[in-house]
Amino acid sequence: MTRRQAPGDRGDITWVTQPNGSIVARMYFRDHNGRRRRAKGVGRSKAAAKRAVNEAVDAALRSGGEFRSSTTLATVAEEWLGGVAELVKRGVRSPTTYDVYARTLRVHVLPALGQLRISEFTPGRFDRFLSTVQSDHGYATAKLCRTVLSGVCALLVRRDALQHNPVRDVSNMERTQRQVQRQVLTRSDALRWLEMLDADPYAVRKDLPDLVRLLLATGMRLGEVLALAWHDVDLERGIVRVEATIVRVRGEGLVRKTTKSATSQRVLLIPVWCVAMLRTRREASPSTRPVSPTPWVVGGIATTSAGTCGRCGPGRSSSGSSPTRHGGRWRRCSTSRG
Image (cartoon, rainbow, N blue to C red; front, top):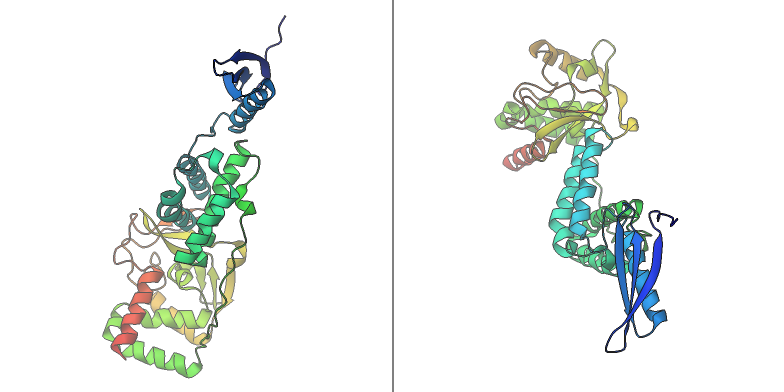
């Protein structure tokens, strides 16, 4: 009784001689999905035809049945990005990570490499692409492209469609060393800044003076301050708990999410003058509102559990108190005051 082929097994080779003298080798094999398929190889001799048909079977088996050697990078990237979306739903990845990867694919990777087939993935092709991106768009963009390409190829390795990740063999990218003059905000600078904000009607209307005071008192990131809720503040003990931040998610608006890592979650001691400021704000603000500024979104901000995200208000921001928007407001105040 003939034994049934297991996935990956190969059958006997049959030979056909063409009128031009070339040899055609054909072989049946079972792919990783259990389907019986036939491969063909052509050569000037039986040995060459045998090598060709075995190489064809090797390529088909490397495709893992799910991806073939003719599958394009665009198709694989779509599935890889879907996997990132699942990680976002589980709270393992940030929504902003998904947005950054999706934009990198849409703007840089797919226009240049989207129609490249798996069989055409080589370190040389990826290296030339990354070098061009770094030359045209800078180190940070090229590094993002490399991260995305490596993730796509890693998926193919896990699915047995590639034997190794070709992105690992591209040349190292070197950041251009630039002399950056760091500016330190002195006490007199901070006082002048606060005086400017207190005297600016636009800044007062946008609730910037107290927001800046809270930033100066805690050293928190702007997104963390905007995500601060009253249940994160203990005025009796003079502390604030940093557990969330505000990000803008494409198609959803402003979202309150837990901080990127456990080390970002911390408890901070605040000075007495900041406690007094917050106490005044607390007396004038409902407990459902964020600490600063007020008002900033329709319906307040949703409280979230660890690893989950909450939309601001009914799902979209109103006037929008994103970190980016506040940066624009500060620049407007600085420009108007000279």
